[in-house]
Image 1 (tube, rainbow, N blue to C red):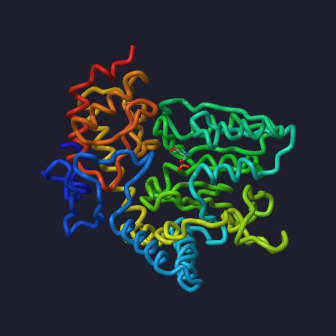
Image 2: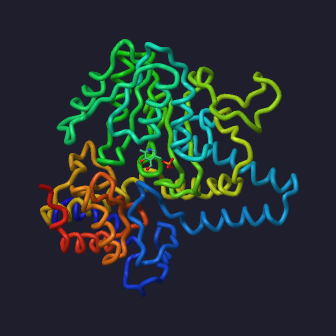
Image 3: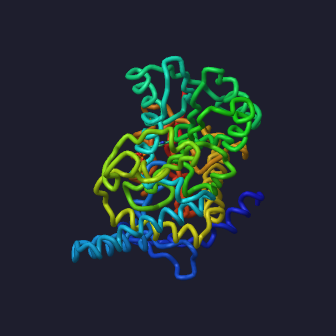
Length: 412
Ligand SMILES: Cc1ncc(COP(=O)(O)O)c(C=O)c1O
C-alpha cells in the first residue's frame, strides 16, 4: 500500500455518506462523523464543487428558518435581527481569512466581485492590465470589455501546463509584467486545468519588483477548499463565491479589498444602505455591497456556513478534500489515464481533470452520471472536483465507469 493510499484511507476511510443505499435515497451522515449531513441522493452525487456545491443540511435548514421568520414578520425588529447576521458573517469570515471585517464586502458571487475590480479601478489610456490566459471570463473577457469602453490594454500570458517548479511559474508571471502594467489579475486555482498558482510566492515576487501594481486574485476555486490567510497572501483584492467550495447559500460571495486600496476603487452599484451624500458612503469594503434589497435569509445563513468551517477548520477541510482528490488521481494513474491537471504536489488541487477531446467530454460526463450516479463537468476535459461530502466509494464508482469508457478519453 502506498503512503498516499494509507493517508487517504486514514482521512476518508470513515467519512459517512458511503454505503449501500437504495437508488434515489438521501444518504444519512454517520452520527460519529465530523462531516455534516448533506441532502443529495446516492444516485445523484455531486463531484462538481468547482461549479456548485450542495449546502449541508444544517445550513439549508437555517436559511429556511430565517426565510420563514421574515415571512412571519417583516417588522423592523424582525428584519434588523436577520440583517444583523450579515455583519456577524462578515466578522467571522474575515477572521477565518486572517483579515478585518472592514476589508470584506458580502456580494452575490465571484463574477460580481471580479467586476467591482474590473469596472472600478481607475485606469488611463496607456495603462496595461495583465491577465493569466486561464482566467474565468468575469476576470478575462470583462477586462477586454472595460478596455474597449475606456481605453487601457489587456495583455495575456501563459504558464507551462505542467510546471516543474514554483520558480518557473513565478518567472512566467514576472516576465509578463512591464513598467506600464497597472494590474495583475489571476485565478488562484484554474477551473480549466486545476493548476494551483503559487499565489504567495507570486505576490511576494511581484511586490519586490513592481510595488504599485494592483494584484487581484480570483479565489472562486480556493475559498472553502484551501486554508487561506489573506494577510500573508499579500494581494490587494480577492473574490469568491459562497455557493462553491464554501458550501454556503446560493448567490452569496465575498470581495476582499485591502484597506489602503478601498478609496481608489469606485463601486459599480450605488444604492441603499448608501444614502445622503458621497461622504456618507459605507466605509471601506462595505461600499462594495451597497446593492439595494438583498436576499437577507441567504446572507444570514452565511453565519451557519462559517460556523461549519470554524468547527471543521479550513486546514481540516483542505486535508479531507485533497485526500479524496488524490485518491482519484491515484486511480487515474493506475488505469493509465492521462490528466490535464498536474500531479506535481506544489500545484495540485481538488480540481482533477482527465484529458478528453471536447467532443467526447460532455458525453462521458453524461455516461458516468448515468452509470455511477456521480455528476462531474466537461470543463477543460473530463473534470471531477470532489469535496468533503465525497467518499472513496464515490471515487471508485467514477473510476469503474471511466475505465469502461476509456476509449472516449483517447486524444488523437
Ligand atoms: C475561476 C472562476 N471565477 C469565477 C467564476 C464565476 O463564479 P460565479 O458564477 O459564482 O460568479 C467561476 C465559476 O466557475 C470560476 O471558476
